[in-house]
Amino acid sequence: MSQMVTTVFRRPPSLPCFDAGSEFCPCPLAELGHCVACSVLRGENHCDCGWNGACIYEEFLRNGRKAGPVRREWEARVTHREEIVPERESSVRAAFCFRVRVPEELTRWFVLPGSFAFVRSRGRPEMFNVPLSVMDREGDVLTFACEILGPKTEDLGRQTRPGTMLTLKGPFWSGVQGLGAIKAHAGGRTLIVAKGMGQAPAVSLARYLKTRGGTVKVLLGPGSLGTIFAEDILTGFGVSVVKMPKEPDHNVSRIIREITSNDYDLVISSNAHHQHKTLWRVIAGLPRRPAFAWISDVTMNCGEGLCGACLGARESRLCKAVFDAEEFFA
Image 1: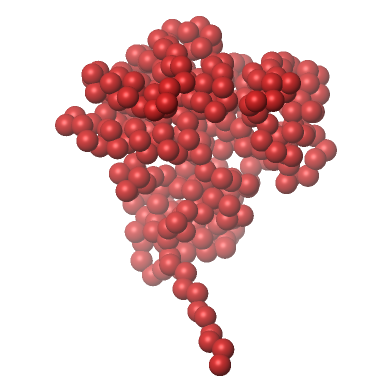
Image 2: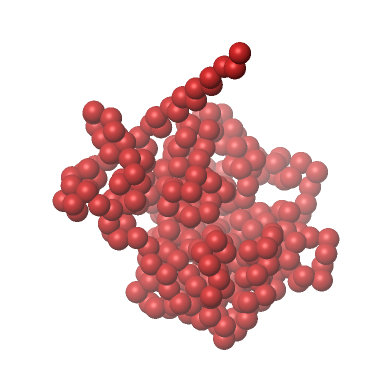
């Protein structure tokens, strides 16, 4: 006799949302009953959002029970390309850095650390979108770095040449968790630990902190990329940089010594999840904890929480939700 299997879906908790209060809120998730922040829009009969801005539910009603505007696509002209790891070096994946010129009205939205965009070759369908952190911003020029990992990034790598046009969708702001801590301690002493492709978002983080009077030290490591490429740009705007060679313990002992022997206000991890978790465990055990932030390494496809690629173990949309380190790394 066959048995019927019933799948029970847990309602995710209300979490702060990166888009809350922006022109992109309420988003299509509100129409579909999956708002990250608003429990009422998820079909519950009480409010537990904790959001201090304009009520998302009221905004949804005022908008005729419809989502607000969605992020648009922009044309971007490639102005420069530089190889980080040339393709002929087959022992590691190829990577490159490039700059694009876009309307200045767009670049001003990328000033926040953790800003990113979806980039693809012009003429390609949306499935070719590649999420890339904004490495740097100057005037109407954005700088990105891309590691070639598969077909989408291979296609982007082939098409990205000076003078060619790319399609860019943005802005998105969920590229870093702990943004509140970064803003609160921007004028203090910060340590950034950046390896591999994590060097790219570390540049925008360091620049943000420096322009707000902070003292910044960056520990750079080659990581799986096999090279350090952000040193010159970081030292160029007054950041103290220490290069870490590859070590059997992945420089963990060196990083622990740095954190425990200095009085940092903020520590930022810019690499993969295993580094984030290791650094958080160190910080959690200190008598005086510095604040902690980390670069998001979430798998995503749409950036809007619709596709489900970013769903975490608690059914939370990791591309939209804001997390506290103590809860996230529990």
